[in-house]
Image 1 (spheres, rainbow, N blue to C red):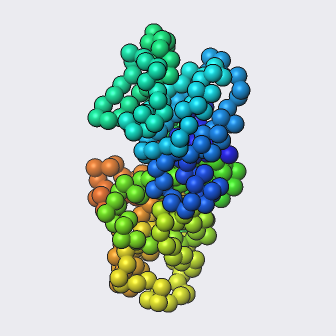
Image 2 (image 1 turned 120 degrees about the vertical axis):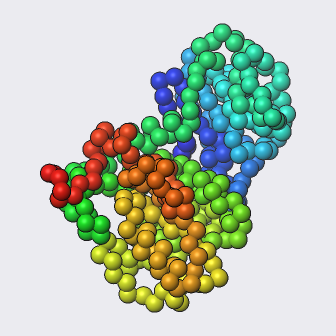
Image 3 (image 1 turned 180 degrees about the vertical axis):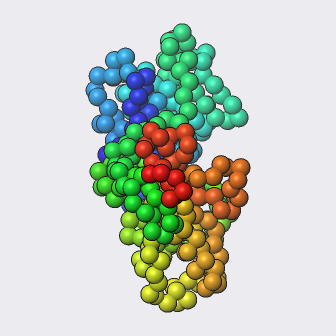
Amino acid sequence: MIVSKIVTEQFIYISLHAEEVVSSNFLEEDNRGIFEDRLQILTLERVIKSLPENGSDTNLVLDFQNLYACQQNLNSLIFKIKHQGYKILLINIADGVYKSLSLDAVNNTKNVHIEGVYLKYFLFEDSSDAFTDLAFSIPDLFDETFKSSIKKYIDRHDKPHTSSYVYLTSYVDIKKFLSYEKELMLYSLYRLAMRVKNKWKSEITKEPILICQSMTSAYIVSILSNLLKLDILILDKIGPINKLYNRLDKAISDKRKYIVVSDLVCLGTEVKIVKNLIQFTGGSYLGNVSLIKVETLSNSDILSRDATISIFSIKKSNNKELHYNIITDLEQL
């Protein structure tokens, strides 16, 4: 299973760090989460098996971001892919990895090296090839891939959102997405874990607790727990009807910090409930992360401490395409 493969008309993209995290944590059980930074032969062999043997006229982008070392003799596997006919672009490859792979035998004038990192390193010498002028953004590439996939799991709704007193025109079936899009789901949660790590660099070392309030988000938080090496707390009695049965003062510690994990944040009502409960019982609220969020305000109107970190946003630039809208009784459905 290759989780990060994105196929476009121009090239195939694969994140080697994401694949290494899968190898280390779900296949080899090295148990380092996203903190793994050494590329293994096992991972590259999985990548090769996922590619057609005949790569003639196929462009391949291998992303080395967040990798700083590699297993010996890995360069033979890189050149095996090249000999299958693929035109290969290595991106975000640190000098240490570059030297370990002994890549200096191939030179292209379009290679880009800045501050100890090859942003682009083409494993062919023809600098006039159209592939060398191809421009792309990995976040945009992922965003389009996720949007195309999630469209299949958005159904017509036209019912009240009971906790926030609005009407939703559509319902995003996150459970189906998690069930039927396993590869993309794992890659999405990998990207979300990386965002959490980068957002709270100093706090992660103090081991905050990941907390969630539904069984769907419990699945998400279990994966994030594995990737971030953090403990979790599941509150399964909090939902749209806002009922609470358990004694939270025994579950939430006043000496710990908490990150609230959601599957989809629409108007943020459930997140506010959990935030208030954390603070009421003496805990510290760090913030909220979610697979998907709905942007009902412009970024300039959202305080940074209240912003939800997500890997995909439903916003005014894509909500019509996704047939997703929020309506009140002040306007016609």
